[in-house]
Length: 92
Image: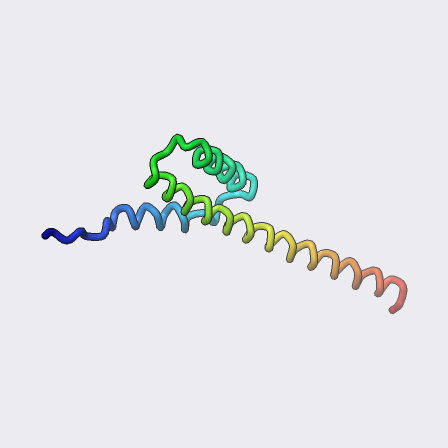
């Protein structure tokens, strides 16, 4: 009986697909995610490709959340600074 060896090339490719998203904008990630969802739902891709696309989609969702969390933190920082400036202006 032959033992199957893990496909390292496939693992490396999956890691690149999932990890190299730091430069991807929110809009680009969302557009790619919508495309992936449409392809998977259409049934036009094989199971293995669907799984690969699903992993990519999960990574894109994480990227979108990361960008949104950063934007939320920035908005809160700006709002807090504005509130402090207003309270200083009225002498609180």
